Length: 118
Image (cartoon, rainbow, N blue to C red; front, side, top):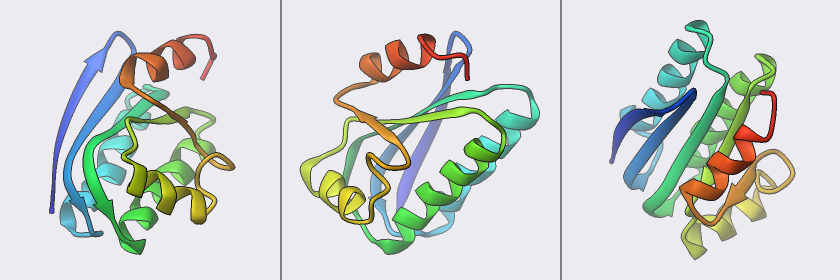
């Protein structure tokens, strides 16, 4: 189970994820929060996974669904703070770097998003 915290840093929505990404209800909330914010006109997102040390295929699916929503809206989503195991899983699934960019920390992701138009 994961805990989610949403916060704004300027015009960027940051989702802090803490726990195990196993595809449960909390993981589905990531998609819901992104859709709500897209509907509100927000187009830049950071998924901070620095407190996630384990992810399974359903967790990967929740990130892929979020990426799909963001792509359809011509918005931007970056991943930040991937633990080695999480990074390995996302790279094996070709979600990173083929679909989403990953950054070592939130600040790097924010700098990248602020340099893009969304």
